[in-house]
Image 1 (tube, helix red, strand yellow):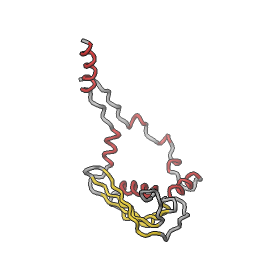
Image 2 (cartoon, one colour):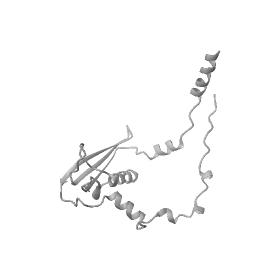
Image 3 (cartoon, one colour):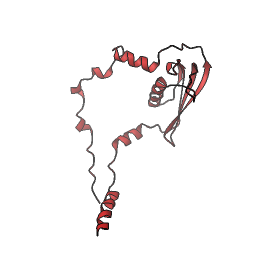
Image 4 (cartoon, one colour):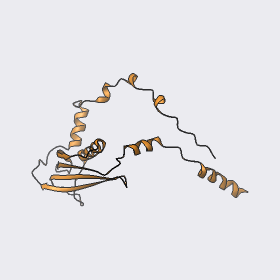
Length: 162
C-alpha cells in the first residue's frame, strides 16, 4: 500500500501538462524563418576589445542585424592561448533556421594599422550613457501613458490533474 502512495503522486504530476510558456512563444516568433547572414569589419585594441566597426554588410532582417551589431560591439577577439593580434577583423554571423543557432566566425583581415590604445567600443558607449551624453528613450515615457499590464497579459493557466 505504501508503494502505491509513493507512485501515485509521480503519476499525477507526469500527467499534468506544463503551463504554456508565452515567453517561449514570443521568443520563437522573433526567430528568423530563413537563413540569415551579416558581416562586420571591426578594429580591436591591445586588450582584444572591439574599438570600432568600420563596415557592415547587413542581412535583410532588421532584428537579426540589431542583435549581431550589438554582439560585434561587445566582442573580444583573442587567439586560443589568450594573446591579442591588434588589427582589423571580419566577424560573420550565419543563422541556420533548422537548428535556430547563430554561428559566428572571426577572420583576420589585416594585422596592425589601428590604434592599439583605443578605448573599447562597449566601454565607451557605457561611459557616455552614464554621463548622460546619449539619449535615453525611456526617460521620455510617461508611465501613465502605458497600458495596464494586467489588461494586456492573459492569465497564466492553472495546472489541473486530468
